Length: 261
Image (cartoon, rainbow, N blue to C red; front, side, top):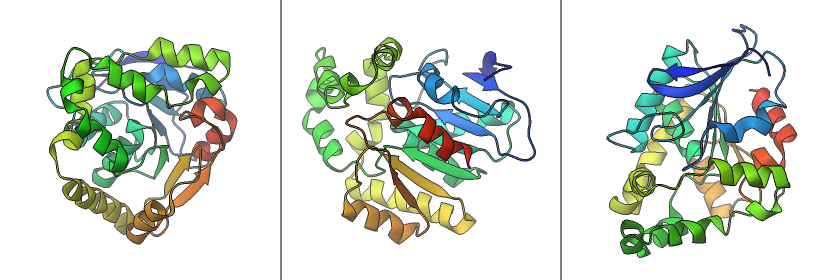
């Protein structure tokens, strides 16, 4: 893509691509935890020339400053300030991993024309149990052992060599980021988190915001049933892969899905 400007938007670092376009909504790309906006490079290369896209660094990541709070609501407010500062109106938000949750929370509270959630369940489930069961480790000096355990299951070694290098180059697993972005999972009851996500999905349903969940494997049936019980129009798409990075294993196919928004 061309016409790239790297600067701060409402206090967050981001790359703004393309030109304003009345025919296609702008896109906002949100990376996952400990990553940064560079991980969108392969997907950006597959989007149509001139498409208006803002790839942001989440608070505390890349070139963006740290924040006093990393709860979903607090981060969504900072994202809204950045998106507004960039002059984008009602974007389609695509978020990978944690970014998928943030895209959902953002679109529930602010104007948006669509959400593409890339491989991120909205309920903590077994992952939450794992975090809470290892909270002492996570809060201690050996916290990276838990992070390494998690990344070992992400299928990084199944990606093309250049993509593997990219994932490793952009990862900055600071303890404050893990504790901050996982704060709700560690401190709030599962039922409370479920209720809040149902409120978010209800808001999307009420406003008719399209919602697509993209995963690398089949989503468990109970989760699909739950999500569609609140957001009946939700679409589930599988881009088969052994890993957690469909924007790196299937950049062309995912770009087509996101670009159609």
